[in-house]
Length: 79
Image (cartoon, rainbow, N blue to C red; front, side, top):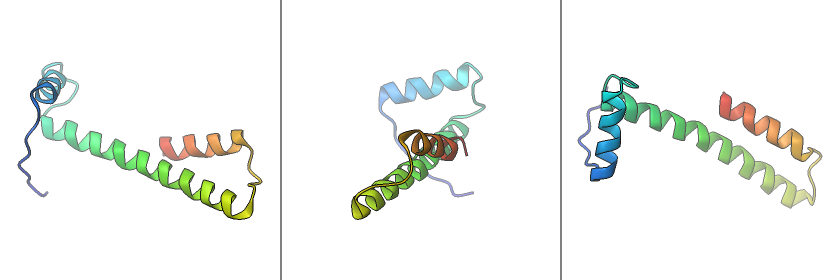
């Protein structure tokens, strides 16, 4: 596993420490890795939505309903 040294603002450091102290996570590293995983999942959803918008703009319309797009995006987010 790659090792990094990073600095946090005081409020972020306090929040990270509170999560570990509350036993939500066993370490700050575990918590930061979880946050990164969540951000990566969100980026997949954002990229998918952008692609749908681009396609709709290129074609003038999309055949998918708002509900379909929302359902599909939630499915990607929940992975």
